[in-house]
Length: 399
Image (cartoon, rainbow, N blue to C red; front, side):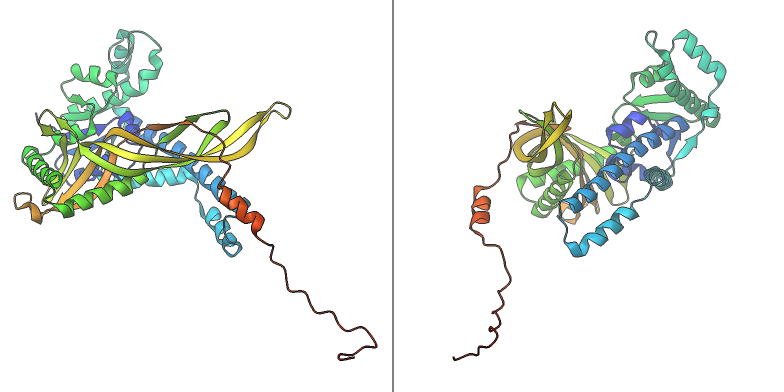
């Protein structure tokens, strides 16, 4: 069934980590020049901005604290400490940074705003008192008002323009509302929604599958290397929470994933491939995979002081563990898709689905490398050469 527009719910933005410039959300830029419109409810835009501002403030505070900590621990050469202060002073206001970032996304995607004023108060009240979707028949229905306003305003926009909308949302209320709407259908998976809007997606999917089959067989080493390099860089930047247990209070300071290998996932006999963008000599596809990686984390350890009623820092500890998890990556291919595989170049490779948290098990105090302590004991402090005492008065050399 053809659609004239696509819209995204707030929970879809959150599921992608509000990564506006990368991954699946970046693929929305195709709609700026496409016959299909990207429309966003004013409600969704406001909610995304609120979440983005919270994330930005948290990151800003953590970054400034890290810069201060670097200086306190004298981990930066004295000659560079002034530059460190300048970096701290140049950090912009988090609320303004979030507004500008969202504004750039809206401009890049050509998103059209659907004002909440499109929503009819009469229709809103009818849904509320009838406990019709997205309102639940039980529970506190006031929390459903934002969804109801968003959906009714989008439906009014579609009716006025004679359009059909494909909405991307994992919210059950949105899905239930769509069952009674002639203008809105709901798909909970963004990648599948994007594929639905692509013409000739089946042929492009077959080309991607053919290339991945060649990568697995080892007949396309350049493509294989490009994919592994992309996965290595992307996994290293993946954000996840580090967890552990032990006799100390633990707080993760930093963590990272070191790529090991991947195996393409299959649905039946076919690879799990979803075309999310298709243009002239370009295709972007989400590919399901099982990853192996080494997770590494640094923890700060503390104990509770019952007298001063505060946590006392006890140093740190590092941990690593081998993990395997289900996920997916986005690969962009360039070239003539109808031509030979050798003429297709692998472009951007980004991990778009991976592990949320890693349990590192028992974390104990790290006493350090014994060799470091032995070296410290054996080292002699540097001292300036003693000056030769001046001859005593009344004496001279050689006597």
